[in-house]
Length: 276
Image (tube, rainbow, N blue to C red):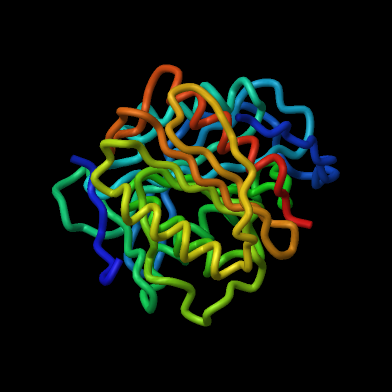
């Protein structure tokens, strides 16, 4: 891909079970469903927080990033992460992008290198949740859609020391790590579909990341519901890159069997790659 363009909305591997950290004395395990405001240099920023019932100790935290011209509530519904998190017992948060290029309530992300507006906001969201809730700091992950996938790519470079793994659907590269190589070589899942107009940028992003973190050219084949292509690459520092393309689907987040497979495969990648 010769230029980075902001994107707008228009075979399983057995997951390891990392040992959770001990809970900080003051952290909460209580269920929560609310909108949270944070004051940042660019103004008051917002995220949705969902803490499920039944947590018994420090839980994984997933940050879900909406697409360009969308919002946290829409992404929450389309992604299916909240009911999945209730089943799997992890915390999920949905920040709202800071780029005001569309009317309220929608936003996009400042994913470009050199602009830390949304990098700093997402890091503050993570810190804010950790300050009050029982989060396993070795198991913090990001999943993004479209322009949110580009923001996920940016975070993989900017915050690799704090993240276990990341994944995108129908996204693309943010342009590559500013310093060439991230602090830690992060596992990354790249997902797209036959009729996704960003299929080529997603493929280019996965090639770029494989080069960035030193992956083998040999791949293990993966299968699953409605999968046209599925590969897993082994990389330096024990990382993996996953490439998965679904049959027939488009740019929108998939539903049904494809949507379930997307969540399951992303979550398997996350569970297999906590921070060391």
